Image (tube, rainbow, N blue to C red; front, side, top):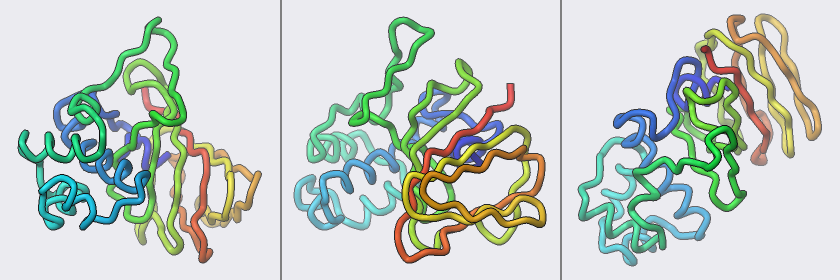
Length: 206
């Protein structure tokens, strides 16, 4: 997945926990995901945590790194230990990664309008990256086509997406899938007025 292999971990990218930069980058998306799961507005989380709405917004967008005090307050307000935001849990045995539905971790992406929850093992240990993606109406990968090493496979769960590969457009509805080599120029978008949901997989470069 372009989002899961370069900036999410998109091609050649890393998953949260593999290096300090990735850990810091994952804090904001984790806070945003937990806030949305609890149906909290920025103001409501601000009231619970005694952290300003402006600061929370900046942390969620990745434009500000929270202080330890701020992270402690937000973690308490969201009902999670601080370790959830800075640690990557290791599975036992090491060759199996079990991810309960309620414990999927958000994956960072620079693209607006798409939320990713990881369902695959950590980068470096596994070559396949996978996430459940939710794409907002009108969201897209941008005007410039994407191109990188690897493969991507998208399986639609609900809603619709349009995926361009080279000069051809594939329109995906519920149950449809598209699998392609990502060294070819490609882009995606949600043309509908409802959110789209898909399982998005990518082959990470070895």
